[in-house]
Length: 454
Ligand code: HEM
Image (cartoon, rainbow, N blue to C red; front, side, top):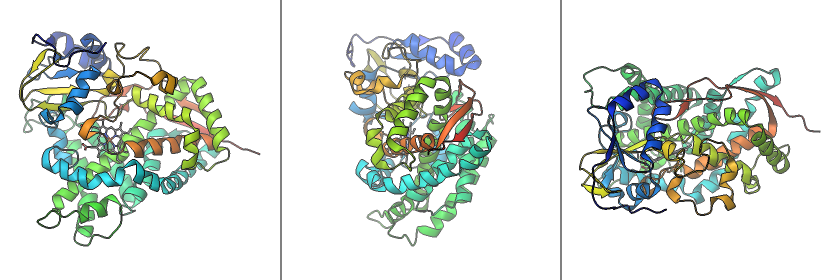
């Protein structure tokens, strides 16, 4: 039933008490955040974490209001953005004028139309990346899925979006550095009121990772900023972006390059890592997927033109992002006081929105814990609230890479399953580890066998 975003009368938000929240978060952070969502029942609630008491927004009507309807009142700012500001600075991952300018410059690279023009080159790079799985598959050796997905994605992203201006050796140094950033900020997230002069676990790993990232990105900026070429890759586009007053500053280019490297690779590789344990635990889904891909792609290679005939593959990707939306939680700061769902949100307060929580609430999804790609078929999707499913966020900050991800993910899945049979995957049920993005706690391994077609 639709609810009144601005419901009256104004009341105090229900607060989930510290004595209940803290032990649960320490014991099982993933279970605890899902339980908080369930307890909220879609109401705006306050989570008591001691000195820090963010509001949790889970109802699709409220999400639509915060992310789109009145998004100017909910800025990317406040204590939970601070750890990431050290990484992204003033870029497309910030807010205000620097964000606006960055988004304007980068957007043309990522429109559905432009991504379509890049699709054939992407398919080629995906094919080459998948070819590297042949030696372990031939010898029946287990493959570290997270590393393998990162290698395939890096190859695609570096070639298509970075114009091969970062070589594979540097790209391979960046992957673990972004990984370390993602996991090391968790204490700063959980204890945002602790000042930076007080060291927390993860701080040193974060600094080391930042150093590695800058060792790759800063020389890249120096090489290209004064002499940008006319390429349509991200480095060229950023370096050519002049304000009225002259060329872009080295800092602005660096911040945006880091933002784009972080969002373009880690997210995609992370999301695809979750697929294999899900397929291992749901052989019926794996069989249907393999059948669809076998019929349409045959001996391959996969071409973008095949994708229109792979509707189930797309549904699998959509359902994958429902259960494991890698951008699992994103905060905002309230700019001006405003009532939402009957609760007065005060200026400067932090609110958090989480696709991970909303996607798994019984209030909005039937059997939310079940992996059921069919729920994204046309028939079963009708009537669904736009903001019951928002793995890519929404409104002005909606993910720039949405079309890239959907294309890349389908090409990679169809590419792998047209060439290889999955013999095993362990573990069968991977559990999330909390970090800036949602990644499996366990190392995920698969064993593949080449499909020999006559
Ligand atoms: C599984 C894949 C991905 C997921 C789940 C995802 C999720 C998200 C989410 C939730 C946001 C909104 C954050 C907010 O509102 O604060 C976002 C923003 C963004 N994403 Fe993605 N993303 C993915 C892949 C990508 C890729 C492949 C790229 C680039 C090629 C990308 C680039 C960006 C950028 C630049 C933004 C910032 C947009 C802005 O604020 O204007 N993402 N993403």
